[in-house]
Every structure is written in structure tokens, then in C-alpha cells.
Image (cartoon, rainbow, N blue to C red; front, side, top):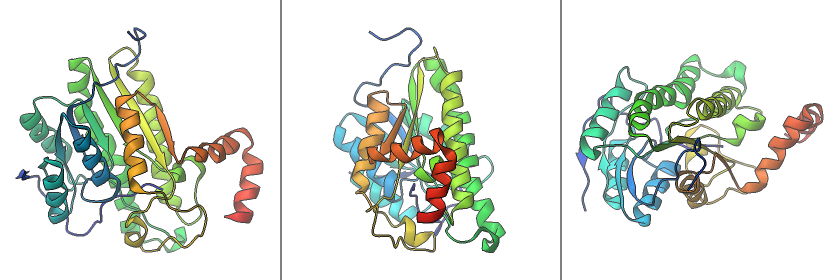
Length: 280
């Protein structure tokens, strides 16, 4: 499941915080190493790991977004990036963030959309406010941000968008109905964009992690208690994001074997549902 910054400590406005220290004609170009990138959900977890990974690659100028100002500034300082804290669910936050990022970077070669939250428990007991928060941040805020960034990439004739999804969106997970629905919508959104952008020079990648070793599960209200599958290091997901961004990968599962249950569900949905009902 995808992992994201804590909803604690949101910033309701966007303000810059300087950090210290030959292809097919209709295929999007693969970005050269280095460039400019905006990473959301960068306060912690996957977004923070992606920021550190891009910084380690060298040649990247980074703008980082998150809702926890203190943690975001720390990650930005480690990555040599500019921190732009903002709550992307606020009206107009997508336009303000994009404008400030373009003012600082001049152009955007890469958008990594990793902002999101989760919640676990029976759907009938889920607070209405949490439904709105998950759909608002995990899906709507991402869609609005992509809508704002995309015209600049299309005008430039190049760029890459990488959406952070979740295995929950591919197979559905018991006790995570709304989160699974939001991530499933994000996966379909990625597919549709890919079709629309054919020939524009802009590509869309979709990274699909399973269980990742981040604070996500503690923050969603229910720790991860299963002995299998074991959580993978967050750095593996950051590597997958770089594969999607730098090598033009459309869809990357982390770990790779998780593609199998998604395929079983697609090929034999009845069998998959019986197995899922039995084993969870």
C-alpha cells in the first residue's frame, strides 16, 4: 500500500522555505539524468526517499511539497531542495504550488505525485471526514495538480509524471475500501492519460507498492500486523520511481512479484475473490 505524510501539522498556505545546503515517433522521450522535479508527499516516507534518491543521482534541481513543515524542511535540507509546504486539498493550492515551482525551476521535467493518506477499518465505522480526506488528497488533489502541471510539459514537448499508487488499488484490500477505491481510480487515471498524451513527448508512470516500511500504518490508525508479506524498504520504492522516470517504465510493482495477484484477479476474478475471502 502506498505511504504518505502525516496529516498532522498541515500548512494551509504555500510559502517557499529555502533549504540549506532514437525512439518511436509517438513514444515519450526518456528523461536524461538530471533535470527539474517537483515531488509531493515529501515530508516523509516514499516522497522523502524519492527526494533523497534524486539528489543522490546528481544533476537534479528539486522542489518538495508536504504538509508537515518541520519534516519537509529537514528532507529539503538533506536533498539540497526548495521546500514549498502546502495542503494540496485547499482550493487553488495546485496552481500556487505549480507557479512557485516554475518560478524557482524555470520548467518542470518530472512530477512525482506521492501525497496521500490512509485509513483502516470497517467501512461502516469510517468517519465521513476521513472519507473526504482520503478521496480529496489521494485522488482529487493529485488530479488537480497534474491538470495544472501538464500543459507546461506538453508545451515543452517533454516531461514525465509518476503517480504513486498501491497494490490496494489493483486488487482491493479488506478494511481499506475507500483507500483502495481512490488508488484504483488513480491507476485508471494513469492509463487514460497515457493514451491521451501519445505523441506529445510527455509520459506517465505508475508505481504500485505493496507493504512498505514507513510510518504510514501507524498514522492510518492500525499498525501492520501480518507476518507476510514483509514490508520492503522504502528505498526500493524510490528506485522504482527512478525507473519509471528515467527509463520510461509505465507501471512498476514493488516488489515485482505483486504483479501476479493483480494478473490473477484480472484473468480469474471469481477464483481471486474466493481466495481473498478465505485468506484476506
